[in-house]
Image (cartoon, rainbow, N blue to C red; front, top):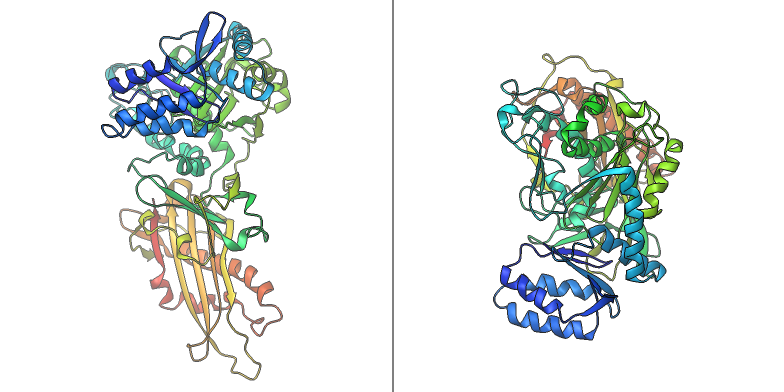
Length: 591
């Protein structure tokens, strides 16, 4: 095991050639150490001597194995005087958390590394007296939880075993899309693995911008592309990405002040409640099986068989460094019923950590539902892990788009500004599996207006090209385009709608609008047959009607006091549903 830690980054060297690892360890003996009495905790000071030693190492290996550059360039983020740690199996007196705690204390409070480590050990010992701690992801090997022998396995989520269910796939305890290649659960059957992947996608959606920014590759070994209301992230080659920002949605002063704060709101939909379920599911996958009898109600809640109208906030904290893979620490109360929850969890993914309790544990007797009931509990953890945690609601069941607040520096090549009409902001065609679906108005149940709800409308572009004199003919022509993308796992439809209006000659463009609308459809699966490639015609008509109404909400105020103020798209609804336009609507499955 070889890890490098600084306040700016973490790197794991276990995948390097043994010869390179040995050279690095030998070289570290010549780094300027942090000597703490007679002890050596693997701490060093970055200085000019370090630079020279790294240059010599790079010269030796870069023509043989280019991976050495990842190690030497890791230090480019450091400045003279910065402290870093090299942790190996040879210095067991300090672990991941102790190193990061010491670096934090040294950086923020100028407390010596020696004092910080001693303080951490004291605080952690106090925590260890109260909790039995199970840590996952900090080893250099894959970790498998549960019964190895398939015939003896019992699924943690449905309670079934073979032959009623199969265990052909080993479940990732943390999603593979979040960088997990080490933590697995034997005791999650194939049916539950597929079924519960739907709530896991809400956690993935929350992390989309981070996944792309930090280069976490998906199953296709690609860095994911991300869609947003005011931005998008696109791949440039296999391992390079770029963030494009919509010019119309930036501060008016962005050209003179190129560094500014911006809230990025992604296009995917998720619920805070499912996000919390996804966090708790990770714990169910990893916790020792002896605790599962106390979590029956928790598992019923994850399975949707128990409703919890109120759940406590989870806490999160953003770090200046990036964890190379997910870490999970589970704290089990040694004395349940002592005024503290039975199970507390800290999950680290990339540069963010989530801290939360497990709800509906039998020992807790429903006591820890509100944030007020957890104030004293969190104080124990603040002493060790700091008090800069931010609350995040977990009770809301309404769909919304995740957002992330970032500092934009337009002097950095990672960012580029383009008009919102630029093609780069169109959904990548590779994410759609376009299959023509026939509209069938007979074989599906009826659907009412209350069964489909608008959750988000985005104005992508609007433009008036020319005014029309009152003396000119009133008639105009329309060119409409509509695409419906189905997200079956979220009961969601994403509709792209574009209307271009031309004069009576159909040659002169008057104005145009381009919007994206996200609908949630109750029991969407009842109105679509994927096998027959059919979709309810009534559903498509209802989507069109609501889309025209939403487009009018943008058009009416924008066309006010123009010669187009009389235009109402909804007036064309009956004409459209009885025209060839309906045959031209593109319908596909969003993947």
